Image 1 (cartoon, rainbow, N blue to C red):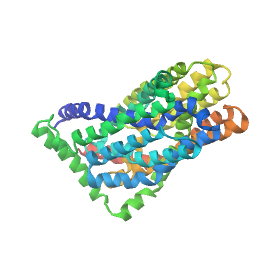
Image 2: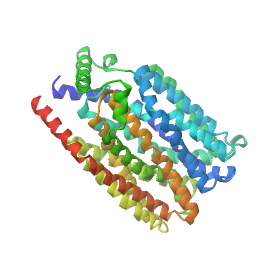
Image 3: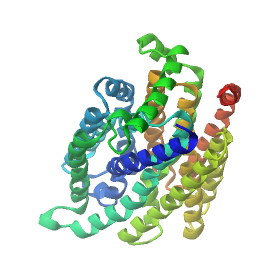
Amino acid sequence: MNAAEEAAVLKKTAWRLIPFLFLLYIVSYIDRTNVGFAALQMNHEIGLTHAMYGLGAGIFFIGMLPFEVPSNLMMVRFGARVWLARIMIVWGLVTLATSLITGPNSFYVVRFLLGISEAGFFPGVLFYLTFWFPREHRTQIIARFMISLPIAAAIGGPVSSLILQCFDGVAGIPGWRWLFVVEGIPAVLLGFVTWRVLLERPTQARWLTPAQRDALQAKIDREQAEDRANGDSHSAAHVFKTLFDWRTLVVTFTGVCFVIGFYGAGFWLPQIIKTFHVTTLQVGLLSALPNLLGAIAMLVWARRCRSRMMQLSDVIYPLLLACVAFVVAAYNLDQPVIAMSGFCVAMIGLYACMPAYWSLPTMFFSGTAAAAALAFVNAVSNLGGFFGPTIIGWLTQTTGSFKLAIATMGGFVLVGAIALLLLLPAYQRHRDMTRARTVAA
């Protein structure tokens, strides 16, 4: 296959796979974050303070942490079709169960269980994409998949607000309980659809000709053979070595820092916007704006990365932008227009860096090592999803204002950007090896 033929095959493959995976991740993200909108009614009804809500929102990620890597390795054993379907059905059932909580303790339990049940989904999808797309195309493909994240947040805000408003009191049940029922059912249904329709490898792709299937599979197989020749192994020792490789640890530390900002803002933004004295529906609409702008930024920045070899600055510069924007928002909360502009720019920075950031593990590792690294980075980085909401809740309750809490989010993002500078030597070696392979080809 020449370059033009390969591009055509991958374009056709992307159109077959990405929209469905896009839909699955939209449902995943809405189910993990809809608690931010439920809190507008739920906190008062079941007696949650700011600190309690922050802890419960974040404890989801504590449940997820120990199961991310085992889940990804189980997907290697059982296949993406079965394993991703299992994840979706279970997390959908737990989301439905969230409608039954009665107080802080039951809130903590279901959030913890939701984290366990959803563990492995995101890194599993990223690893699944490596079965279909060669290395040089993955940043752009990951961007197309990850655009579902801001789209999910943009859709989830208005939809959740409408459910809260329209279903409140139906059958004598509060709107926030209906929210978990209405948004939990799609995950269960899509889990069964996934089990029926998801394909494992290019050799199963009926939309490609036999020659195209063989050529694409051959290229993926060659890359995996190179990985094995370079030391890729399924052994526990090799996986352990990958997890504690210094490059994995640096990428993970940066992930923790920017996820603190991302989920800290994500879980609390509806309540922050509510302080601007707007209606519940307006909260949903305004919360969608930073995510819509983030979606555009993600696509534009990923295209920029694809037009040339990806650089570490493609992650660092957007993080620095987000840091400044968080500080601007924090010190202008009494001026809604400026504060919302700050949140919009912060989310633009955080979303823009994601495709390049999630390409870093597959830049340094591949095969089983890449699967383990992606799962580890996602699992430990998501600790930021625990610390972010928890820190905001504690600081807000302690100071009586969101100002210091939001500024602290910016500080964590800055530290994460600085940490990536440690990867410069490893990045230089990777760039030189890639150029050498290109010349040899």
